[in-house]
Amino acid sequence: MDKKKLVNLMADKGMTQAALADKAELSRAAIYGIMKGRKPTLPTLGKIAKALGVKPSELLEM
Image (cartoon, rainbow, N blue to C red; front, side):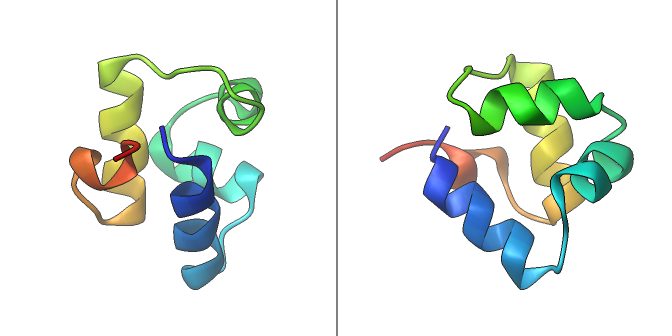
C-alpha cells in the first residue's frame, strides 16, 4: 500500500486514523499497523478504499 497516498487521501477528507477505522469498520490497531508498514489483506484494502471513496488500485504502490 502506498502510505503517502493514504495519508494524502485522509488529509483531503479531513480524516484521522480513528475516523478512517470507524468508517471502514476496522480496528484502530489495524489502521495503525498499516500506517506503520504492515500490508493489508485484500478485504481490508477494499474497506479502506470504500471509506475513502477511491478504487483499491489507487492505494497500491506503483
